[in-house]
Amino acid sequence: MVEKSRSLTIVANLILLVGVLYILTPIYLTVTTASQSYEFMLANGLAWVPGDRLVDNIARIFTETRLPLQMLNSLIVAFGSALAICALSFISAFAIVYFRRRWAGVVFALILASIMLPLDVRVITTYQVAANVLAPINGLLDISGLNGLIAQIFGEPLHLHWRILNTHFGLIAPLVAHGMGTFLFRQTFLTLPIDLLKAARMDGAGPLRFMFDIVLPLSRSSFAALFVLTFLAGWTSYLWPLVASSTPDMQTAVVGLAKLNPGGDGEIPDFPLIMAGAVVVSIVPLTMIALLQRFLVRGLVLTEK
Image (cartoon, rainbow, N blue to C red; front, side, top):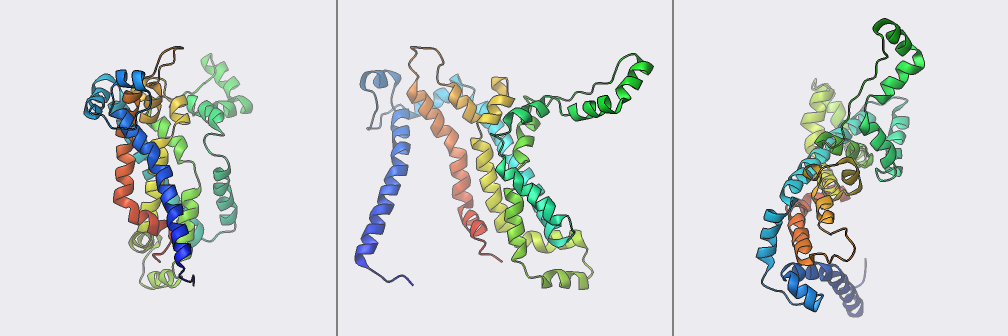
């Protein structure tokens, strides 16, 4: 037990206050900058006092930029990747914990290895795969000599091609390959009493009924926590959407927000417009955190058995 001490309480409160100011100051500057006009920023620079142009700048985001469509793309990518990660992680962790096989530990180790190789590290190879998902089949056809036989019969070898770049599926699929969700669900399943499985077998429940009727309701906090984390990761993902989307109509909001900054030398960015875009783009993740915060905390600390 930590003894109560007035001096310790004062120091802790001061540290918390400094941390809050450190976090809120950039947010405050973002809102104040978004509320100023472009001419005001050129004349005065950084603004610490709010202006009266916030609504006008936000309206410009919806009329002069592609951010609304790009936010829809971000919503599709974030929701799709979060749902796919939760479903795949839940099923894989269930198989590893409740279907005990000799190779279960090896499979779990390989899944955890994906954490060591995030998408930003393997972006080049991922791009090559997304450029033609069927390229490994073409390689097998060439190595096995079947392409030579096909060329003799039909006059030309067989080359399969399936390009998923610049599509919603192509933006979502590489984000799903991550093992953190499987690790989270596995740790949750290990906290559940083994007697639940025995009781389900005695009642004649099969694996699917045990998974959906017993394990899934007991794991809803972990499911919600993982969904929030992966949704935020998909919403804020920058490098892969930048590489995989070649048209502005398929880019995500974070990429579109970066594109608002002019690339020409000597051009002064419209900082009020950019900051207004940052405010608009931040509404969705902030709302997600506000609505599911309690599930996020309970799921991460694994307090619900």
